[in-house]
Length: 188
Image 1 (tube, rainbow, N blue to C red):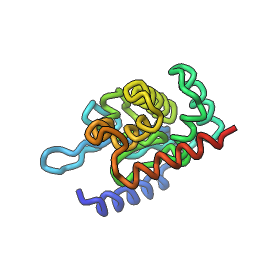
Image 2: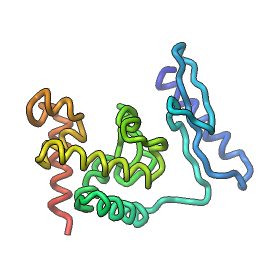
Image 3: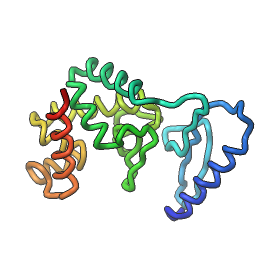
Image 4: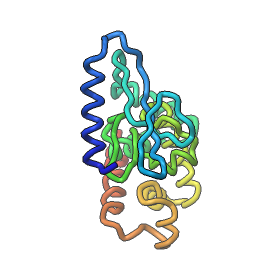
């Protein structure tokens, strides 16, 4: 389905959601695109399904809740929570529903293939996304032994860091590293 059609479908789905009774339950709608390009939607996903739309009419994740999740997950994986906060701020600006043009999803902007590796089922669940993102960042730090290279791997992928034997020459990745480090070094 072309991206423009997907956006139109999302808008239509959102309008339908608004017309539902107020006692609707929270939930996530998942989709799967078959080999013919047909989208299949469900609320009971299998491993092949991706989150399409998550809604919870009675709950809004605020910044303090997100920071508490960051501190908890960072402690569990022996990372500086200020580093995780800097990555999260650059990746999604604290938006649990963030989705990049390249397909990265959630607060820590995790790509679908990486989500599968990490066992992340719902990338729009703040706790699950942060936990997966922190684990992935820790893996990159352990693998590359340098904060700059770990950030490059988080952004461009570890294969690219190995391919270029250092920070890839991508302007986006170089800007990303500078932004994260600026936030990290500025944090009290």
